[in-house]
Length: 252
Image 1 (cartoon, rainbow, N blue to C red):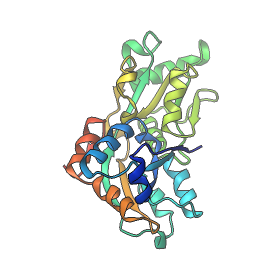
Image 2 (cartoon, one colour):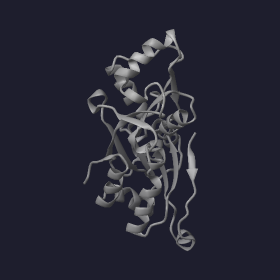
Image 3 (cartoon, rainbow, N blue to C red):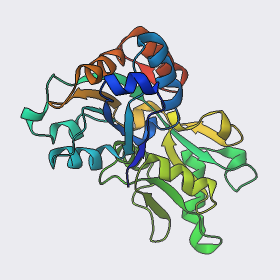
């Protein structure tokens, strides 16, 4: 399910300037407020309305006519599913993402958080307490595809019945862990803001999965205000915010 956030920009300015409508991968949800604060400060523009969901789901909505103006996808494949006539400009990479394995403190994996220990615990779980792992769904979430690749590289995939919980998107994966529905989760580094600092985190080696390249695409419905936002994402100011939020900038 996508979530639409309402603009909180200056009301008078909003009356004169179209509010850009942005589709954004759910991995960007946590960093979004800081990103938009800098965007408004740098450009004087108004806050876009944003709908968060998995990149695959958003691309399907766009292909079916959803009136988004800018698409911030966590992969290129989702953009390639969109009819070419809907793209006003070639898509560009604006950041590189990374994966983390996370658990709550004082859990079975907390003292030695690694894929190797996760494998041991999962292999042993049929003889004792069942261990459950959450990842974004590989069917439509780029970080889910990357998580599956990492688990395959570590000799963990496929998991036994009852051991895997596939979330609708990256944000929901984190919520599954925070709610206690699972023992461990693999999520984008971008979601681990200060409010989750108590979590035990282990960044997964980048060589275990294909790069998670975030792309920005300007769609054929884009207003000048929407294009301004899309082009700002590639600016040094935006790239600095992305770097501070767990992404690797591609245009420093």
